Amino acid sequence: MPFTIATWNINSVRLRMPLVEQFLERYSPDVLCLQETKCADDQFPAAAFRKAGYEHMAIHGQKGYHGVATIARRPLKLVEKREFCGMGDSRHISVSVDAGAGRSVLLHNFYVPAGGDEPDPAINPKFRHKLDFLAEMHALRAEENGNSGTILVGDLNIAPLETDVWSHKQLLKVVSHTPVETEGLERLRREGGWVDLMREKIPPEEKIFTWWSYRAKDWALSDRGRRLDHIWSSPNLSPSLNRIEVLREARGWDRPSDHVPVIAGFDFG
Image 1 (cartoon, rainbow, N blue to C red):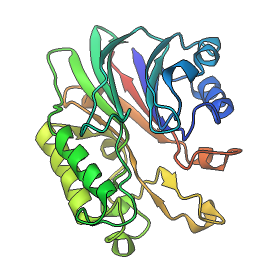
Image 2 (image 1 turned 90 degrees about the vertical axis):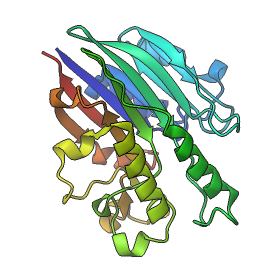
Image 3 (image 1 turned 120 degrees about the vertical axis):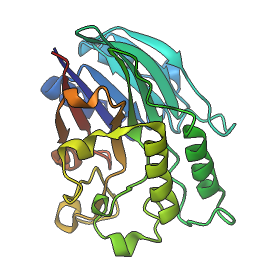
Image 4 (image 1 turned 180 degrees about the vertical axis):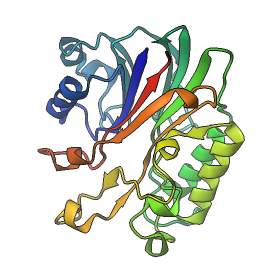
């Protein structure tokens, strides 16, 4: 049975709801995980999602900042809205979803702090926060039990591999690609037992970008991107992965987010 999950940092769900509706109509994922929704729960555009056929929602919002939401055609069971680092930020939500063929998936949706501009935790509290957040994420494991498994998606705000950025050498001292971040994220993934699904389908020697800065006059021409958005799973789910799709064209839509959606398709047979 096919099962699809999409992840997308939408950079204000209310502002970009027309793009979300366009995306849902065209690609129809079973589950859509949004980050940086930037609205309180009572301001979330739930009616628009229901009209699009997505009746099931788990929301962890915050007025004007951060925020994550998981929306689905299938029933969702809220598992946890975890607060990291005692900051009161809405950056995580987990749900349980029936993926079909007797499969149950625990799905984590994350928005990791960006970390500011200066990659020095001694002088930049935002970078310290990011490193502390990653340290707390080590508690999450890629749990699996028979037909049950775990998927972790979201804007992790780190491009771990050299081919996850437009220039490894030029970005080594730029937040999102510094060694303390990239090595920390890869250690978190390995020790947690997670599989990087994007790199299961797209070889590590090939570049992948999911984010392009608003500062570029012509984002497509300069193509100075980074892979900040990720989809991981427990090992027992990765053999069922049949496709990964990065919707680069979405960066060129009208009034776009600076991130594009990433879709993972599974065939649980």
